[in-house]
Image 1: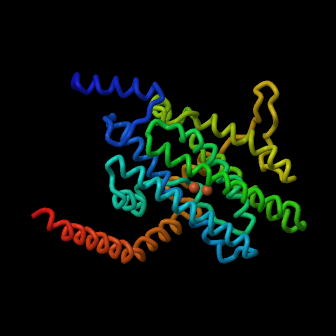
Image 2 (image 1 turned 30 degrees about the vertical axis):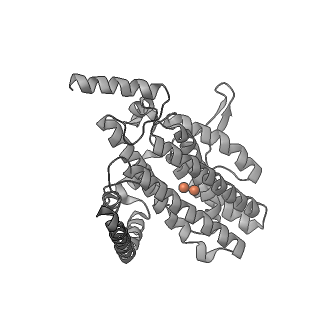
Image 3 (image 1 turned 180 degrees about the vertical axis):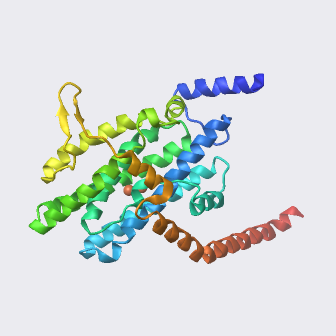
Length: 321
Ligand SMILES: [Fe+2]
Ligand SMILES: [Fe+2]
């Protein structure tokens, strides 16, 4: 590293430590840029792949009201994907490259979306637990050191809190319904609980990028801290629903002031991340096919933009003369 670069790096670190925001045209270390591209693109991919499990239930929603709520939620997720791809593009990577990496299987997205949605109660469990875990992860990102990411997260989090509430409300309705409905709600909790805890990523000891991301103010809490917060927040909600969290080791620890919980099956997590979850192939196939079927829209939009640009140049010609 040259003395000039060392100086730039020292200034960057001091700037970030001072809670100031880094903007796209500011100097930043290559590793910081790369970390952000990886994190923001994985996040964007998760938003749009996350539309698939719930999209499956739009046509099967039990009422017009539930259908319109679910439709709005799934559309919000598309919007989140778009803000995040745009934020990622400010780091000098193109959307085409990002999508190619998703479609080729090179890029990762949240492993939770590789689980199937078997019935309507899953819409409740996803909103309550998956969006709940997403909020826990994302609220601290509103203070992330990279300006475009932090600002995108402010709006995303507002919408996520609506998602979480609509999910909880579905669970509440089912938990107070018939015995069959209560059983469906319990079954959905049983299936989504552990994958939701895995959403926070590997434990701190196994998480290779965490320390550096904390130093750069990208990450504010460790994976284990966020997971603990999520468990502590969710246990009383499950009690209110009258449902049982599927963990025999779960209990309040007076000394720690937190809930203890059982061990997570990290082998399952690794399998899903490696592409061997129940729906990995189906999700990627759906994404690829949607991308191919949308090619004409992208071509038409590009042709229209070109035509508009040409009109602009020809209308400014007299002034050029
Ligand atoms: Fe989202
Ligand atoms: Fe959401």
